[in-house]
Amino acid sequence: MALEQWDTIIIGGGPAGLSAALVLGRCCRKVLVCDAGAPRNWAAHHMHGYLTRDGVPPAEFKGFARQELAQYGNVHFWEGEVTDVVRTPENTFRVKLDDHRSELARKLLIATGVKDQLPNLPRIDEFWGTSVHQCPYCDGWELRGAPIAVYGKGRRGLEMARAMTAWTSDIALCSDGRSGLAENDRESLARNGVELIEDRIAELDGGDGQLQAIVFKSGRRLARNALFFDTPVVPHSQLARKLGCQFNRSGGVRCGKYEATSVSGVFVAGNIIKDVQLAIVAAAEGARAAFGINRSLTREDFDQRATGVKRVEHPSVDDKDAARRRPQS
Ligand SMILES: Cc1cc2nc3c(=O)[nH]c(=O)nc-3n(C[C@H](O)[C@H](O)[C@H](O)COP(=O)(O)OP(=O)(O)OC[C@H]3O[C@@H](n4cnc5c(N)ncnc54)[C@H](O)[C@@H]3O)c2cc1C
Image 1 (cartoon, protein in one colour):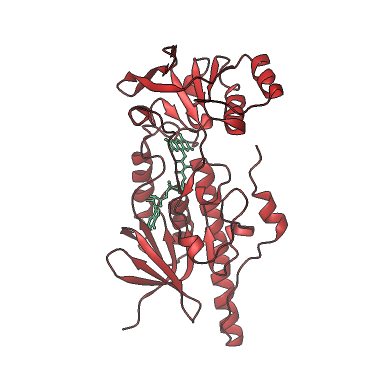
Image 2: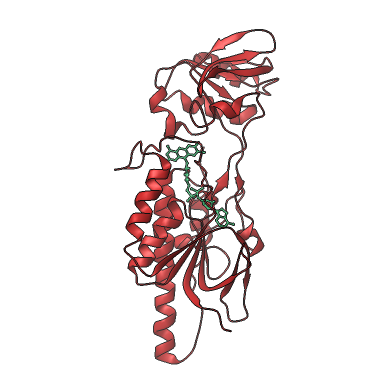
């Protein structure tokens, strides 16, 4: 039996995927959103920096989005994991769901996000998302002027400490062992009032999600209201890699105009691109990808009606566009 064909299957129902669904829905496209329901910010109580939604709980944000999308009968949802994707000889995509069903789509949007890797510090799970954070743009305002710790070694630790100086002047950079920083970096930190502590960390201490102190193996106890860290993130799914998408040096999917990847018919949006990692940026990328997808679908159909020839239209991924997406520190 022939499978039903969607104009687009969106894999991932976070801000990127849902925003794309709205734009494509409004373009009269038949869309299926597949979402495993494990967004990156699951541990956070509030989402900040999203105009008109500043401070709302992430689940509430998703609820608003789903409510808006319910108006579009052409946008459908499936709750579960996409386990595999293959390109068919007809240049469509066969998407395998974890209930063993398959769905077919003309275009694919991968918006599966990334996962954080928490530093290996005793009791960190108790504070993650409430007073241990990875993004000062998300949670820095609430901690402005407060005593905070930064966790990290080498350049990563240094850069997070430097970033935090926008929000507070009371910063301790904890490298949990040798920092690996050169003398000039140590001097820069000292001149900025950042204390570098290379003692090994014994545990984080506090209660009810509120960090109170960093306890070092030396016995020192440093009172802190929050800890920020910057460790590498990992893609939430391997689907883009499986399809043969190229990646950039920072590990994000290489994409160009309208978030088109190097694989014809495949677009990406959100944190998987590894550009600015804010929810509103992910949503904007989703909208841009939706624009590119609808543009390609419209051109393909228009040309086929005009010439009788079926062809696949895909925006180019030139070096200028790809370079624009390289994150700057
Ligand atoms: C603790 C924390 C707090 C944060 N606070 C803020 C904040 O205050 N403000 C802000 O702007 N940003 C914040 N962020 C960042 C924000 O979470 C991301 O920018 C945003 O979630 C990215 O959206 P996305 O759509 O790319 O990915 P996500 O929101 O992570 O959504 C991806 C979705 O894809 C699904 N998925 C993955 N693989 C598959 C698969 N194979 N099949 C089906 N579905 C799949 C996942 O389950 C998930 O639901 C925070 C992040 C963290 C970790």
